[in-house]
Image 1 (cartoon, rainbow, N blue to C red):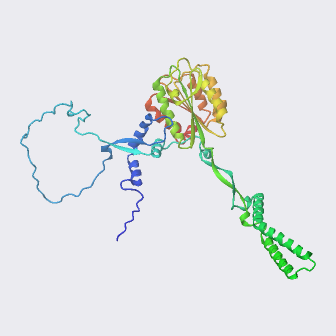
Image 2: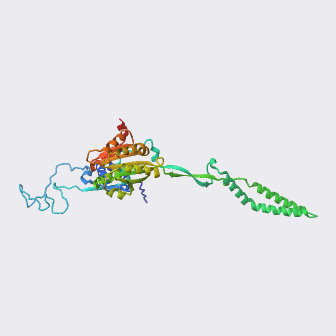
Image 3: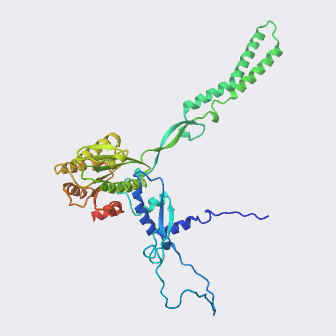
Length: 428
């Protein structure tokens, strides 16, 4: 009888090495599809991977064939419809020779079938945020780890000598000694009573007295043989490690929803927030998102209202900054939370309010946040808010700003904000 043992780590056609090699080979096409896919997701949707399509002709590989060497003759069949020099009419229907079907046909005689390739969540995020990093992470490296904190967890029967609980051990010793000697002591008391009665008689029975004395001596020795404390009695203080919530991060999303912000501008801001949220999940285990919308007044809302509500009237940006500062003081202390903020606006603001915004950022918010990113989504010339923020960016390493003109700028701008060594390059 023959036995076959399959020691392959992966099933047929599912080799991990082959998969990694495939991703490396077609990385350019995959990254382009990944950058386009963020449009379909919600801000907090990071639970799944992505299905991407690659043209079939892009994944064709060269194949070597064994040729039929030597001289050979072949006879090909002719036809009974055409002769040399005949002109062939264009096929009917379909416009440019595309046939009569309803699909889109190629006018060059060949089509482009697509190969659909699914990547996992981790592969999706790795490709999306390759070569990016969180600014100011080096000096705060421990903040992104899931730290363990020691807590008391009762008592156990073994452990380090330094963790011995004396009171618990003595209680156990007392209980053991009582349990092991109680019956013997009762018997001893009875024998001692019998001995006293025999000795009180006028003519005591010396043989009976000697027997009782031997029994009493044996019981006393057995009682004394019970140790005062035994290894079984020892109790040690027990400790266990539990995750300590130091890896928490909060992401503040601030956006102008005044009349000048149309839905197209909000959609571009949403794509930026999706990128930022997914990027933060690479470094922090627990992330909360706070949405603050503002026009002349600021309000904390949910995601649906944040992106799709429309307001009329002017814009006072400082109202959102004030509300963010109040929420941080109330719920997200800087010693316990890693705070990130992203502000999206079309640049409109009351001229008198822009200096007030700069004052709040310099004196309060930038002292609490790890990183603050401002994106201005507009095709117009910059106004007072941009100029005020420019002066802040020159003096604060944890503040950055970029200008987005169209959808195609979102991903490049995001990479510019979070590319590696961005601060060192800016300082140089």
